[in-house]
Length: 601
Image (tube, rainbow, N blue to C red):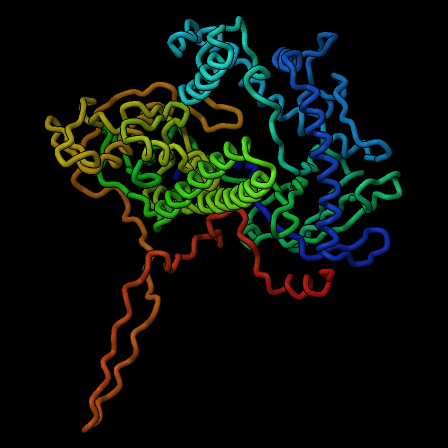
C-alpha cells in the first residue's frame, strides 16, 4: 500500500438507537415508548404530505422541468431539493386545522424532489425505449446514438411493461410513452431526513462517545399551533468501533421507526489516507461468482511484465448463501399463494372474501418478515465479505482492488432458478461495503469491464478450455489454469494495472476503467498471494470426560458429540475494533438500566 501522506474526507453511515429522552425545556424524562409515539406522529404528517405531493406532481411536465434543470425564468435550479421546490411552487398540503412548521415542510419537499429527480432518468429511458419498441415482435431496435443506450437489465424490465401495455391496448403503439403512462406514483417509506432542515428543527452534539440530538416533535397527532411542537433531547450511544476514528463532522440523522422503536440512521465524515493509483504495482481482482459471493486473485507489475501465481482466495459465506436461497424460495411461495387468494377473493361471496382477505394479510405480513430477514443477512454477508477481501488485499500489499462493472454484468445460461438467485445476490451492497472498508486502509476500489474476464486466458487472451466442468479453466497454449473464478480475478487485476493511468472519476460512484487492455501475465514460481485467514470452528457440545475405570464396575458407553456446525464459528477480532458492519451496536449494559427506568408502561 503506497501512502502519499495526504488524507481525504470520506462519508460513511451507521445506525444507533436512543436510550434516554428528556424534554428540552423542563428537563423532565420522557419514556421511550412515548418518544416512539411522538416520532410516529411526525412521520405520519411527513409521509402523508409527501405522498400527496408526489401524486400531484406525477405528470410529464414535472419531469420535463427536472430534466431541463431550469425554472420558468430560465434560471438554473439549485441542488437543494427544498429550495428548488420553493422556486417551482411545489408546496405540500396538510389536513385542515393542522399546523406544521416550515422546517418540517423543508423535509417533505426535499425528500419528494429527491425521489422525482431519481425517476427523471427512468422517464428519459422509457421514452427512448418506447420509440424503438415494436409491438408486433415485442422487441426494441438497436440504439443509433450513445445517448439512447440503456443498461440491458433495465431495458428488459421496460420491455415487459411495454409488452403488457400493448396487450391491454390491442397492439396500438403510442408515439411517445412517459413514466407516468406505465408506472404509478412511487410508494415512499415513513422517514424524516433531518439534514434538509436547520437548527430550528434539529441539531446534534457529540461528546464522550455519546450523541445528543435535539429535535422538535409534536405533542398531539394533529397539532393546531406552535405550542404543540416541543423540543426533545434524545441521547444515543456511538458504536464502539467509531471511538478511535478521526471523525471531523457529524451529520443530522434520518429518523425511522421499525419493530424495535426509533432508529437513527446517522452519517459522519472522517479523514482516510489517499493512495496513489498511478504508482500502484499490485492489484487484487474480485470476481463475482454464481457459486459464492466472490473470489479474489493477485497480479503484480514487475520490470519484466505482469506476474501472478494464479492462486486465489474463495470467499466462504458460512452457509448464509444457502439460507438466502431458502428464504427466497419461501418468499416466492408466499407471493404466489397471496396472488392466488387475491384472484379467488375477486369473485368470492362477501363472507368468503372476508376470510380470504384475512389470510392474504397474514401472508403479506409473513412475506414482509422474510424480506426483512433477507435484507439483514445480505448486509451481514456484504460486510463480512468486504472485511475478508480487504484483509486479503492488505496482506498482499495491494494498492488497487478491481471489481467487475455491475452495469454490464448479467447472469445467464444457468437456468431460471440459478439466474434469479444470482441476480438477487448482494453484489452491489458488497461493492459499497468493500469501498467503505478499503478506504480505511488507503486502498482504492476501481470498476473494470467484466466481459471475457472468466472466459479468456490472462496470458494469451485466447478462450479457455473447460476440462473439468464449469468451475475449471485451462489454457493449452500457456499451460496455466485452475479455478475459473481465480483466473477471472487475475484478468480483472491485470485490467486495473494496465488502465490505472486512464481512470474516469465518477461522482457518487467508483472510479471506472472503461477500456480493457491486454498484456501477458506470466505465471511465477514463487508465491504472490497471501494465505487467507480461516476461522476455526468450535464444537456445539463437548464430549463427556472419560472417568477412570474402577475395578468391578462396567464403564458406561460415552457417545461423542457430533461435528461442529458451520454456523458456530469463532470469528477473529478485526483490526481497529471494527466488526465489519456499519451498525455494530454498543454493549447494552449501561443503556438497559436507563431504558428500564424511563420506559413508560
